[in-house]
Image (cartoon, rainbow, N blue to C red; front, side):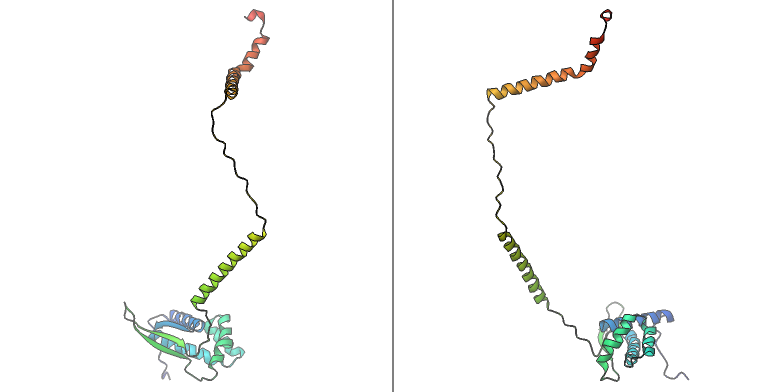
Length: 205
């Protein structure tokens, strides 16, 4: 007999429905709360509560059964070591559904699905983090200043600026000689050609 076996199909194919429920169960066990539609939350709730009851008996068969559903070894170990001890005093009611109202756009009935017992994760407030970062920066600056103090003070040599003055007569003569020499060298570019004249015979002239 199939009495009280009715389940919502969530307008999905069987393989698609199983994959979505598996992924939502994983994220709920990992992050301890999720936001979803009420119809999906009811189906995921049933699956997660079944997994938590399995985790209360830590045996090889129960671990294998949980792995068949989750297919994640790290998450199975977290379920048996971290999540199941939180629900030792409870026999049921491992999750709760908190309504959030209707979603703007398609009007879906949204809700929050979360675990009733959560693992507390301590987080530093933002102000303390900012203060610690500033203190570290200031300490680094002070350390750099102390290093510079210990090092000997080296004075860099300054470049002398020579004032521009008019050239003297000797300098002008030198520049003229250099120019004349440059002209002579330019005229002797065909020096190799002129060497042929030395080897010519007298009858060639």
